[in-house]
Amino acid sequence: SYVKGAPESVLSSCVAVASGNESRTLTAEDRDALQALNEGLAARGLRVLAVACRDVPATEAGAALGEEELTFLGLVGMVDPPRPAARAAVASCRAAGIRVVMITGDQPATALAIARDLDIAAGDGEVLAGPAVEAMDDTALAGRVESVSVYARVSPEHKLRIVRAWKARGAVVAMTGDGVNDAPALKGADIGIAMGRSGTDVAKDAAAMVVTDDDFASIVAAVEEGRRIFENIRKTLLYLLTGNLAEILVMATAVVAGWPLPLLPIQLLWINLVTDGLPALALALATDPADPDLLRKPPRPAGSEIADRGFLLHMLTVGLVDTAVTLAGFLYGLYVENSVERARTYAFSILVIAEALRAFAARSRTRTIWEVGLFSNWRLFAVVAATLLIQFWSHHSGALESFLHTGELTWTECGAVFALGAVPVTVLEVAKLVRRGLAPKPEEAAHA
Image (cartoon, rainbow, N blue to C red; front, side):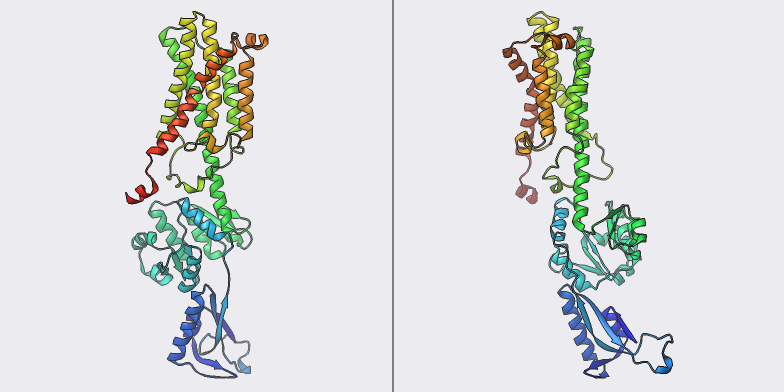
């Protein structure tokens, strides 16, 4: 009868050790030597199994056999190297503010060696074994989880308790697994992630997401894609709502001041459908590439909203700047040139240009237009260019002038209108540079 299993378990059931073709009594010195050999293999990152046997008389063949009084045969060390992309994926998680913790059934020495290789644990990082987890209550475990990066020799119950301990500290927990014993923890985590190839049906049913290629790097890519989608939704909404706020403020100010309406219904419709709509579509989910720094930013706090304080403050500030330049052109035409038609032409063109150019600045909250790349989203560039060409053409085409109720502008006046329309995007770009200059340097932040 042959037995294989964890070295400490098999060795505890052995009373003899094989020596050539014979066996001899297993001494305390033999146990120490075998344990040292096991630890040496485990320290190299090998998964170690012990093999033992027991002679069974022919009369007992087929009977239920106990796993005791075994003869130790040897150790088997197996290499299960991490995927080449795993180390980089762990580093990306760390940069993104995501803590990676290893929970495994392997013995502590093996788990620590692999964790060091992946930079999950540094130096002699603390390893918490299943029996130690068993000895703690939930409160004590919740107080320890932040200082432990590696758990070894754990049971399914231990995995679930570790997940719950992290959640008790307010963390958003993602758990990966592939076996039946992982199912409770997968179900208990905020995001259960099962392996598609090696995973059991039970694990897949318990998980919220299945990774089809069993690659940890794919999980990191999913995090990046999720952040990209959120950022694109946020900046598209911010772009649209800021433009709409400016239109409301322009019209409301004119009504309160008793001025003629700065914008006619057809002009408002043109702004909403063409000037706002087309750039917003070009900024939308699938078209704008991800920010290269996306995985170097901390995750959003749990429960955070799209329209947070920064969102509303940005919308109000930029909306007021749009309103100011639009009304400046309107008042110039109304009181200097004494023409309502000219005033509306100025207001309409300035607002269209302001919103079209602002689409470039809306692509990033921290990087300037030139850092993002003017042509990195060619759809947006084409839409903005077409919008500006049509807008300038409308002042030199009788059909469009009649349709949009605008007047003719000389090219000099078009240049002046463009300059006023470029003020909001200029303010946004300067504000990015000012915030960057006021932000603490990395060494200053570390010192603080």
